[in-house]
Length: 316
Ligand SMILES: Cc1cc2nc3c(=O)[nH]c(=O)nc-3n(C[C@H](O)[C@H](O)[C@H](O)COP(=O)(O)O)c2cc1C
Image 1: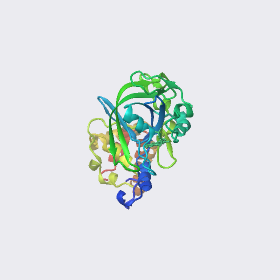
Image 2 (image 1 turned 90 degrees about the vertical axis):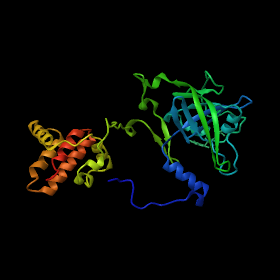
Image 3 (image 1 turned 135 degrees about the vertical axis):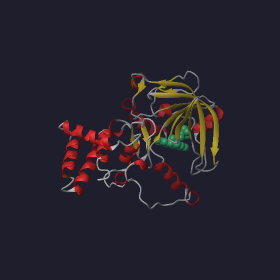
Image 4 (image 1 turned 135 degrees about the horizontal axis):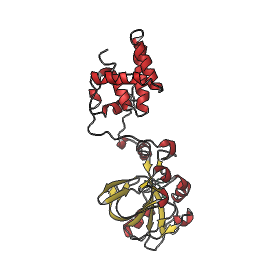
């Protein structure tokens, strides 16, 4: 029922693999990752900016985020971001939209601590309200943070250092707000995948998933022929299983009568009626047509149609 896995897996013990391979496993398999563009300041007052994709949010009350500057896999040296945070435990974490990726990529090159990536990568600055590091005006979403803990995750070459940050101020550009909400198309954020791949979270890449209302009955409650269908896939079954209960045969019959009476114009309703009419003469093809009609309806969000027409095949 699922197309992205096969029954054979490659099993990997990270202790038996070189660091580069383990790193690549994480980069490819834990993706796309949001990108934190992190601004810090050195004791000498030099601004520093660097991207980190080992990054996420971890709680809202109070709001926490974390990211992880690793020790160099080659020589074990610490990144300027980490060195700065050990001295001045404050930072500003910015979201990264598609428009900024080349500048962000430039900011990720290893400039020495005496150079500011703000200047090198051409970002405009804004003063922060609570913390000392500056903000990047070009990003639409900023989080001023107090660093509460830095947790070493190995202390050697390639090891991460989890920087746990409590957010003390948010800043949201009005340009990405619509009706009091940030909209993904306006944010146009990017994510990091493995190797040189990135993901752009806007336009055709966006989709919505309706949250099940109440408790879904579960896929196990669907009739066997639905669960084992060669036409319906995991996502189709997930939608059907999110319904609270199966309709009884009276409801099914009533629904189908209604579909017939409506003189259907939709492709999937026509296909369904065609299948119903062929059930006696060509039952195998007819059942396939009805399952296909249900699948198309599910793709169009017509869950009610899908469950009723599938249940019309139950016990036939
Ligand atoms: C999109 C992107 C994501 C990155 N994520 C990380 C990360 O999660 N951890 C890390 O140690 N380095 C990461 N890097 C590399 C650092 O940004 C790079 O080492 C940078 O030079 C560190 O700067 P700093 O020395 O000023 O702190 C990433 C680079 C890019 C382009």
